[in-house]
Image (cartoon, rainbow, N blue to C red; front, side):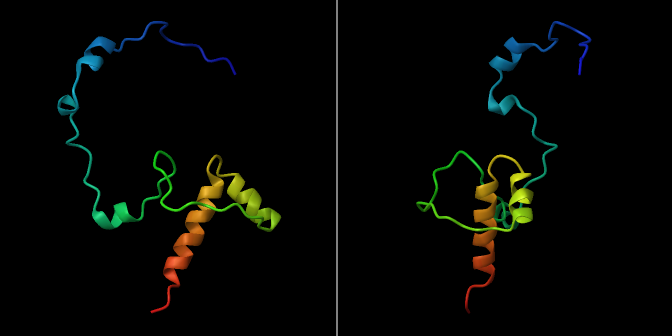
Length: 93
């Protein structure tokens, strides 16, 4: 697919952006994230794992594995997160 650009030169003022501090950025239109929503967030990258993971062999139905792989990079982490959530939901007591 050929994409024709409307302009070869960026109209962004990169020097002005580089000079900005975090306080210069207007975040007033970003709604706050309530703690209960934040607690349900999944961290995919950037933080060291809390527990060491162990490598195992796990047999899954082909359609299930294909579905997770279709999610792209990090599908094994997603499987782990779903199993962890299931474990939490089925804790005794």
